[in-house]
Length: 116
Picture 1 (cartoon, one colour):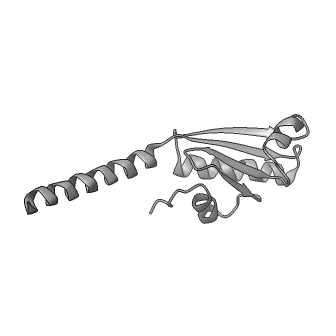
Picture 2 (cartoon, one colour; picture 1 turned 135 degrees about the horizontal axis):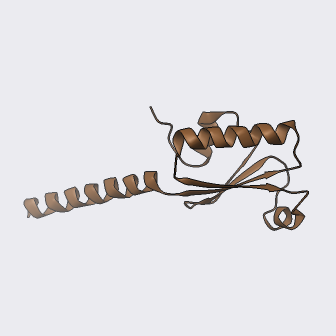
């Protein structure tokens, strides 16, 4: 019986490790909401792109939405401040507000650990 139980634990551990590895390979779908093309918006866009290229290279889709151009999207997604980033995938959905200049906070906010 102990051998069977140990095998189950190993299988569970392997499944956990495989799930964790899959999560780390997941494609991140991000929407960044900005209010016009001003310095604050440009800085947020640059920060998000730089962080994503460094930590999510080839594993992210970023859509920048100007709420002045598409106010209906801001309303639908309940955007109350800009810049705001919404991580749609992988689940859970998360929302970050600010210029995205703090890399550690950004990565924690989207549920990703920084690379060492």
